[in-house]
Length: 186
Image 1: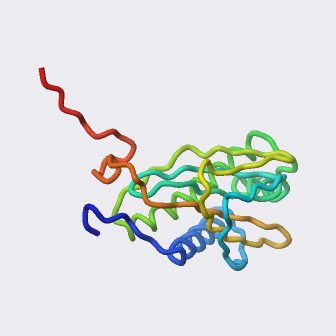
Image 2: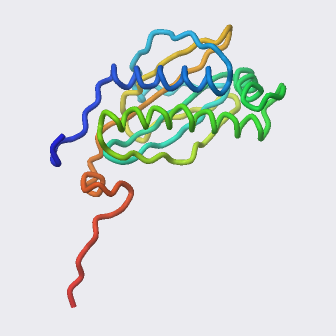
């Protein structure tokens, strides 16, 4: 990729990275087997009240965006129990921390796979976990989200990715997250 060329990665490559990363984390770290459903693209303009758990993590560098995991509170407790090897029947700090860590592992693995393709460094933010009833999440811009649904028994998990080229010149200069240096003359 030339210096002035925007990084490009296809929807299919992003879906493949999410599938591979999610399956690896769930089989290795949680001992849970996932079934993969058909991926689809969703417009961020549709905001529907939700219930359950959503964990969001930002990506920044040559490309910028957000990755997220969402599921029911019951499945969040089940995932936390599998990760911590302890039963969890209600949402608490341990469950929220577990979901944040699972999000970090899944989206972190996706990031690494995309970096192999892009040849650029991407940074991850700290995950933010939201849970409850009748809440909404949406991006500040109207963008497309790639949604990859998974099934684990009767439970569903949705891994979503919204990622596009970074228009910021600092990122193109190889310094994601930092402003370009300025020369001051006296």
